[in-house]
Image 1 (cartoon, rainbow, N blue to C red):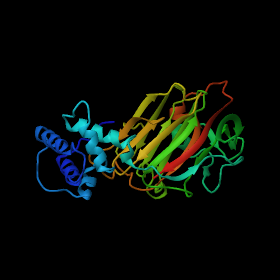
Image 2: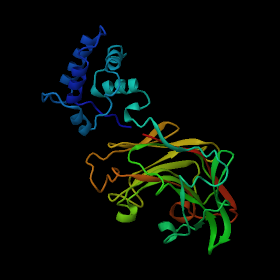
Image 3: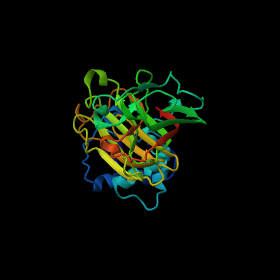
Image 4: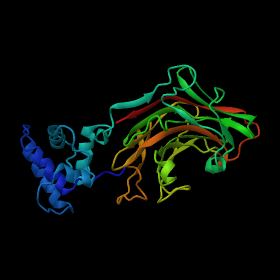
Length: 336
């Protein structure tokens, strides 16, 4: 992810808050920061900004114990000489991007009750939707145990080849719509993806206002998707009025063991940015510099969707010998 450079104002506030620290190296730190600011291209415009000013500017990482920051800067080796290097030290003190927040468990499903998924948490999309759910998909979604069940501590979504209600395939699409939605938070989903070609697994979210404003105005956050013809990669994407369908807001990465091992697919959603990761490794950040209604509908509640589609725009051609393939999910957790 691109580092957030400290502005002169944020550094000024940093000094202001830390003036009473006791570490003997603090005077040196103050001089160091002044030198960095002087030599940087951040003009000194005077005044002491408020926390609200910094928040509006997108600065979120001066939230830990201020003395920790000062000591870390004083003891840094090599000595930081740029604002970016200074920012890296502060981020290291925070640890694992804790400055993004969203660390308290807020909602979850561990899938530890055998049988049907909990109806207090999940509901379903049923049928083939319009035009194969808008993507020429081939499956009929059901809520049958043949397609969705909790077994041995895992949620299993099974795509099957069978003639059912006029379709040649069946599968399931769970959603928390009407049960649970949230604005800002970190979602972690530990899952193993289906191995068969032609399957299109997805872990994603939609704006809860989709029934009134439609798509893509409601906003879509795709935590993880996988194409039917390449099971060695996964992607994250965002859809909104500025770019939807074959969106430009997408990142594809290697995931060679996605169908043979469990991985944690995650998104950390804040008022300023949306950060995607796999197993804690961040690989894509979406943060328009000028947020508008078109490119940032992500200030309203969204709900969670878990599904395996068949064929369509992203599933591609389904092999003739396809019989059945499953996505297994260990847990879904939301932190705020």
